[in-house]
Image 1: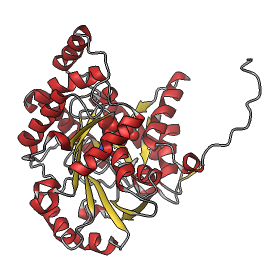
Image 2: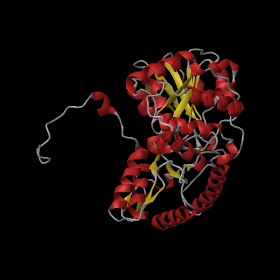
Image 3: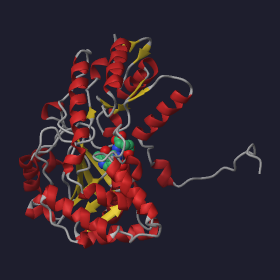
Image 4: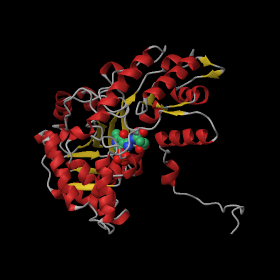
Length: 402
Ligand code: PMP
Ligand code: GLU
């Protein structure tokens, strides 16, 4: 059939029509498109380490290919991988899980999707402290859930307080989702702060917590705390993690959960119908990644820490960029509301989306609007980029807004 033939009109589902496209991936695609047109775009939109996957992990993958790991894996992951995950949870988080509580998925994103699908009924409310990671609200909505945004402030380091949590709870609250270290704010909940939230939840034993710890190792202040470490929270917390960020393995697509057995079994059931499990070679490589000492990846964390300092210093020289000091992950989340209502190079800036688009078009720098993370005053800038790119991008931004 000719590719020029007019496409018949296809009516898509209401479900997909209501879904927002991922703003992070959309911006990365736009930057790629502009680059293909010959524009010199600096991409600071995507949260993706700019390192190569460490050699010792690549070698494990090559070995797995040569050892003929080519069949379907157990739906919830290889026994050896689940065992490595259990050891990791014990070693890094002092969390004890049984194999029946672990499910390996195609990225932490699918792990989150599974959990939403198996826990939520139509109309169930999910509390999302803002800013939250871009996909949370749409993953919740796809499962019929209703995101309930809790606004936080830069003064409180973008963290939800116990009082705010208490006020957001209604009889329909089913879950709370957060990431710590947080994408996009870089904030980290201390053990005491998590305890204060857990104290509120004592009164609501039916509420399930999703603790997304994918940036666990990208921590510049030390002291990672997990909600499941509290005895009274363990039975209703899903701990989500993955290898994308810490091991520079975004494209390998492996994430996992440690969860109450009922939830883990349900996630296994959904994967059995939807994916049959995660990629076999990537799973073998992740066994090696997780069994290695964390010190093997410290060089990347050290580098991110240097870049954090660099970008904070450079942004401090630009008027109207108000930043908190991120304690982890590799993003800065400046409040740029100073520019709202102003005209820059003939463009009226009404909101963070306008500002992010202005930077793309006038500074050739790709960032992501804070609206996508539930905070319309900010933009997100990823500093998982080289020093040269950070220096050049901030120079261009400074020139564009002056
Ligand atoms: N959670 C957070 C907070 C993230 O930033 C990301 C970004 N990748 C994910 C989950 C998804 O991770 P993965 O690439 O393993 O799907
Ligand atoms: N998590 C990364 C980000 O926030 C990757 C993009 C995505 O998965 O949406 O940029």
